[in-house]
Image (cartoon, rainbow, N blue to C red; front, side, top):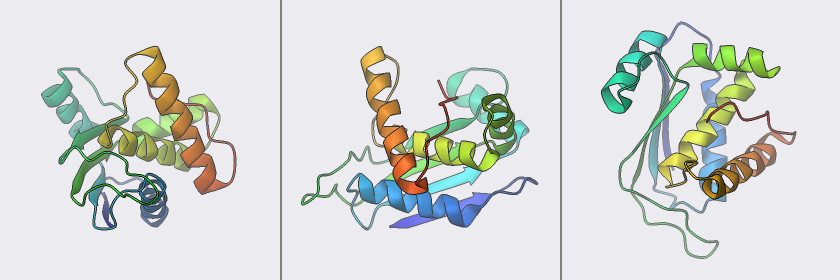
Length: 157
């Protein structure tokens, strides 16, 4: 898998662990070994600009996902097609505020947001109650499998 992780902010982000999380999630979802994804950390101004451009909403948000090849999860003996999963953009300062409000670490919040973004790139959504339960339950299982501890309470809506 080709996973590119970049931090374009002044805040410290454990890029190696975010990369390992993405590998874990993508493997667990049986994505093709040649699948590509990009995860970028942006400051509030850059995230605000994207939020307005793509969602027509003011202010920074925590995470945004931009799917490319509309890849969907595979199965154990039938991985997805190879392709470009897409791009995830995370704002670590928003993650930090959410982590403080949720009573957990900023790093745990970033891992939560990265997992959330990856699931969006694979076609999961949370607009309807049934979709939300499916996506957030899967998100918790993937995070707990990776970290070996309970996942933080979801702050993304």
